[in-house]
Length: 236
Ligand SMILES: [Cu+2]
Image 1 (tube, helix red, strand yellow):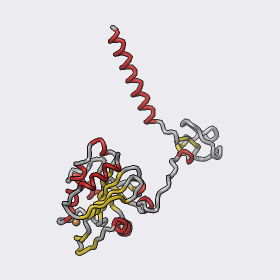
Image 2: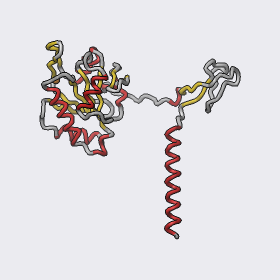
Image 3: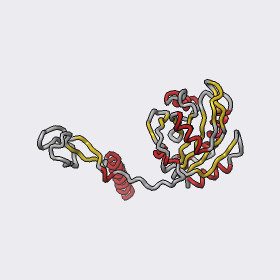
Image 4: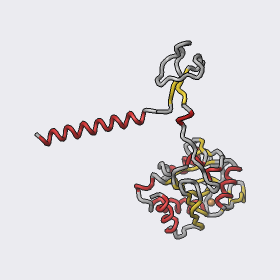
């Protein structure tokens, strides 16, 4: 009987906890509501409803004060680059949006038949050696050096073909100039040698979660122990 009582208490506690969790997820502290016509000037309400003056539906607005304050970024950080990129999901991002994760980055292009398939294999080899519980702290990023061909759609298809469509993989399409700027930061050299081919350096770079370059491995199929040790040290 006592066991049954404890079981019931335990189940109740669990239920309560899951309810609390859902509430937290759906609640957005920074959202307030305001009249779209600004009948009452800057007045905001905590809950949705209609304007007391014009009766129009209140519109959700985000309060400035609750927006996260940008932390300082060091001069060495790639988060200083303000270029716009598109992910394979066609989401517009800036590099700063990757803040908080250890970044393992490489520059490739999807139509490459020579080095890039091996660079991709090297990235997958590194990823395979990261314990599962650490994967969420790491973002593996493939930056295309051929933004004209490598559209988000094409990058997405490439990701699927190569079984790299999990959350921790990301593909980026930039513009000619943002790709060139990023390559300079990585000391990656690349050059268009025909309408469809590029020659390029083979470098995998590791950044800490503040966007500072910590380690690079150069070459194809090289010993990646130091790279993996660096990633693990940064993600603990
Ligand atoms: Cu290549």
